[in-house]
Image (cartoon, rainbow, N blue to C red; front, side):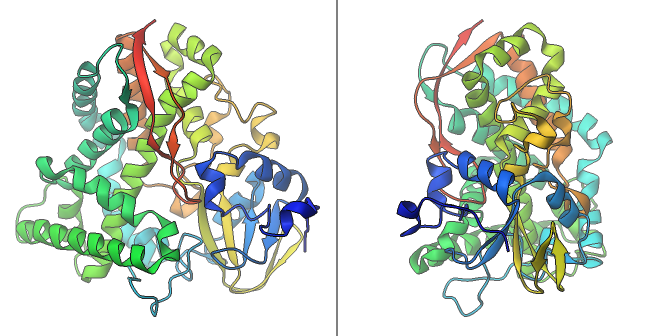
Length: 415
């Protein structure tokens, strides 16, 4: 079993190589421990953490290997985050969702929602996305400070989700609230917070059950709820499975795109030479989108559970062992992305190789839509010669699952 030499002064209270610690992400200091793990112990056992023992998989190659063997490394057995589900835990609620299912059930449910994200649907939605993006950008105050996360990232992503679900427009901010409570795995450590989370999930389930009931027996429409109703794989879901899949689609559609849109502002400000390169050549936008998503990696990890004893990169993995696939770290793997992997490089030749959307059968079903929304945002900013200037430190999500921002103070100016 691989072990790392650590500073004895630091190991008395915390394991410096337990990269599940929330403060690493809150303070944006996760890069150094992952750099050492990649160099010295890419498949590393952590015996003690707030989430129990787990294996940290921090480099590109073994993550692709694990993702390519879904029968050996299960998504269903223990779920998709480091937080274990315990049905005896007050406030715990089991919500089956297709990303946390193995074949064959995963296949049928994923196939149900996939038509919402086909290339032809992307073409159909582009004009609407461009119109809404333009309206948001045209409402921004030039030369005045505002919060990019709330005003741009959250607004655009909740609008998109409302359209995908045919969700009442005036209530769309509820989707952000539910997403934040559902996707925060730190809440599992605190019973009071779990109970509040349960109340929000109950509200979400009740609201969506009303939307479902309005569509039962009606003609099929191109929204996700209608697609579920009209599918063999999902029409007979019980309420918890319905809620689980809703939460998956809400968190997937909200957190990933919203935090990548914030990385557009924060990351390009951090690397002004790359921003200038992009401003001078808007044809780089499609590639820049890929490298911004790679650099941000809005979901830091996915979890798998070994279904039998096996060997990964020379390490003995036991049946039942928990593996954290650190997409965040693999996307900084120097052996794949080069010595400048910690930078955004708008013309990086292999930016598309990133693992921010996962790999294999569980690769993000909405990846094309996320890419489209971010591309349109950059295109519309370029049309307006709009530059975002970060004027204060971001407030970050304190968690090892959703890798994102709560607030980002900015101003905008012309270039």
